[in-house]
Every structure is written in C-alpha cells, then in structure tokens.
Image (cartoon, rainbow, N blue to C red; front, side, top):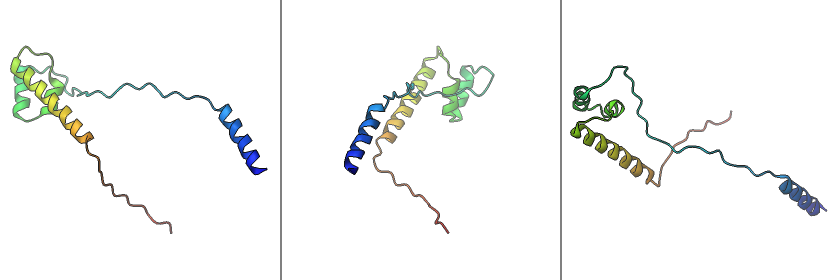
Length: 103
C-alpha cells in the first residue's frame, strides 16, 4: 500500500512540475574602468607604462594613432587572456575550511 501511495504521489508531483528556463546571462567581458576624469594623451600613456601601471594604461587607452602604444595595448590584453586561460586549466585546488564545533 505504501508503494502504491508513493508511486501515485510521485506521478502527480512529476505531472504538475513546470518547465524552468535558465536566465539568459551575457558572457563575462573584460572591462577596465577609467578612474580619472582628465583625458590621457600619448605622454600620459607612456608615463603609465614607465611606472608599470598596466591596468591603468588599459583603462586610459583609447584608439591612438601611435603604433607602439597600440602594439603594447594588444600585447597586454593577450597576456591577460593567456593568464586567465592558464588559471582555468588548474584541476586540483586544495581548500581549507574551519568549521566551529557546536558546544
């Protein structure tokens, strides 16, 4: 009798279930926010490179006519995406969790 009730209950439950759609989420994009309000010209961009402020350089860079700056921009973006790909290849991660005992 219990099995019949269980089968009946599960069949009613499965028949009344609704299909659920996943939310359409846009893929992640790299975005480097510009923190300064002043325009950064080519000299400013060279200063950022000399100071090794690479993420600031990426955020300040706008389509420049300078071929050197455009090449540096492309190389920096490629190095960042290569780093992200290498991080995703890591298969074993050790994680330590401290769980307090109930007293």
